Length: 449
Image (cartoon, rainbow, N blue to C red; front, side):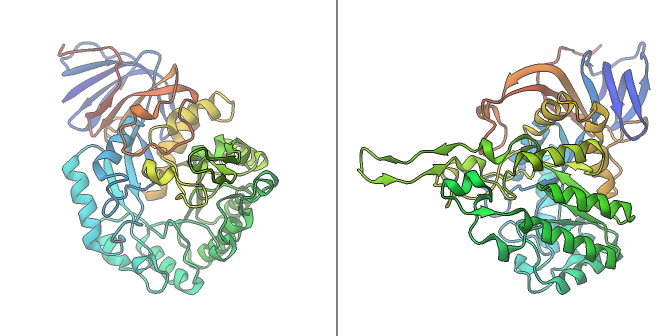
């Protein structure tokens, strides 16, 4: 298919290109980029005036729940959600059933994703067998099968010696470790942030130290082993400080922030006041809306401001979603019994643009850098670049459209987000993967010219 993308504001961090231009896409590649392309015959012409044309977004942190939890999400529904959100490549976490701890499960995911054929799905391998933290998984076999990274996401490897061995193998294979930083011995049943408001309402809290202690450990282990360390879903002010110091020392450390962590604070959590149920006559204790329950939890305003500043100052490298789908039934439980997690593939771009670009923290170039170019660099992936000759993974993003998020419009199975009804600005209009339209949302277009 030959496509002309006409009149868009092209933003390409790999080259610093930041001006209006036409793009010609053919046979999966960007073939031309000129101020104005004249003449020619095209299968489609996409009029992108007043829109940004960026390299397709890359999400380093997605839970597809397949295999084993397909009632929450599948490779197909997750891929459709990704395309709707402007993502052309996603990295799936290994905490499925069975756990992705061997080449056969990696092959299952990659083969299924290829058959679906919507976006690029890369399957990360687990660090330990069954994610039990006792014995290393077949890291070499998984990398040979195409895993671009290893991760124990959902938990930390608490055995530092075992984790060091995994890092040494990862360094030898030149793949990054995607680190979930949580000292499980400090969690102690916590479900929300450990702050005054949550404590006054009777909720056990998760302190910043739960995250910060493991971040410090992992940075020191990366220093010893030389592994490329990528810190997932950072949520605390001290995480920013530690990443900054690691970079000053020249360590191969990168870090991501999720939109929910730079948009919401624990003060935003909706508290349900106690009441007497009229049907049962039982007293119902204070509860909270479980759609605000995620891990790490929503932190304080001070933490949020530090995360925003870290992104602005290019200390924090990547914006990822930690897309974690659950059923309505699961999220309808009392907060103490509901699972952690929030979906994010379909809201990341609009929240980033609204909170960070319109909020004055990021330029559109930085947005593209943190959602596309930098994730590609973490994986050493030849994507996140739309100069001539590169893969045609492209997102057309309208920065002017304002609307309310509506979970009933989501392409993914799950709806667990506190952002339903939130007013935002910026909408993905087209997602192009390897030169093929994977998602479209109604920009005026012509047929064959």
